[in-house]
Length: 190
Image (cartoon, rainbow, N blue to C red; front, side, top):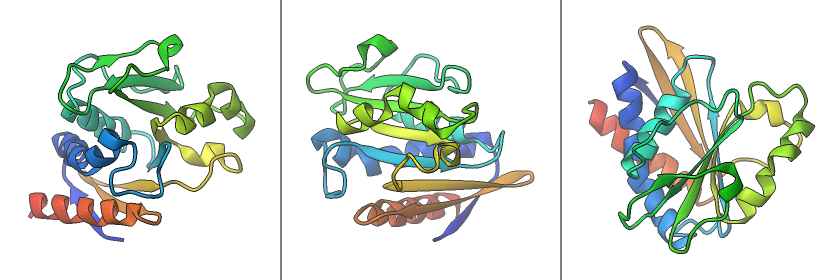
């Protein structure tokens, strides 16, 4: 696992933007070269309050063309987004519209910070979202311990004022994404 130092909020946005091309093969085909994720993919975002988890997600979504507000799902618990990997106009989607349009993909941003019990996770329908091909970006995954499976990919953010340190870890073929992310971002920060 390689640790990278990110000095500021614009740097966290760049991290998210840098991850987009690494995830695109999976988003375009539902698999890409990542054989461990034929249905959906689970990405854990670890870090204390204010570490920049939502800022990173905002950068990723901006890279996919999402123009509207990208807000923290701290109170809503889940924020869904629909993207068209081939550059067709993306849009935010309402929770009742979780089913994707043809040729589109969905990214779901979850924040489990406010869960009192991991079993509350079942009310979010996270398994259906994952099983339907969604990319789930989950903040505070430790709040879902015992119910969530191991992530395909995880990003750990540690505060190191005035910036933060990031590390990536992938499971199975997702380790290639983790290695590529560390390499791309290490070069960008050099």
